[in-house]
Length: 199
Image (cartoon, rainbow, N blue to C red):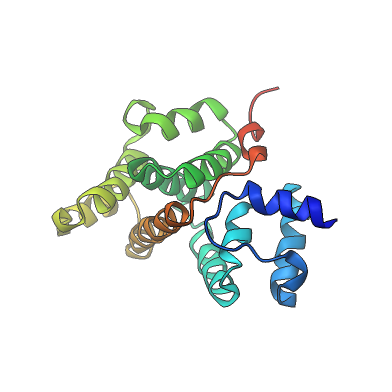
């Protein structure tokens, strides 16, 4: 990639912080960028922006991967749904667009994915998914009001304690990620907008 193209790529992130040249990154992160290109066809701007602090990008991504491991009652779509609900509540442009695309793909249903992204209450979700969304939104908007009954609402729809912990931890992680996206002025890659939509 030439210097002009690299500059254009850095500018496209929107970041107010310096965006490192990809050639200057440690080998582990160069590998992460290469895998993203192979799988997605592009490097997500969150990687480019977070690369300003390379060790923290590595730690964040390791945590992200753990939290997105599907389980019996909390599949990949459910986990992306939490990211979308939190990001919508926070008004985070980057995460709402990026995880909206991932949710459409995980669901295999672009219409439902879009409805959840805009208004999960009107998306005709089943009781289990409504409980997950309600918990994630409450933990985001009014965390001091979360009670033992809110945890029970997740257990009552079939989640294990471990999966209920995951709901809380995913919501908490996306609150951090949303705030960092907004603190840096991170913009979503244009490619996300066309992903997982009907032909």
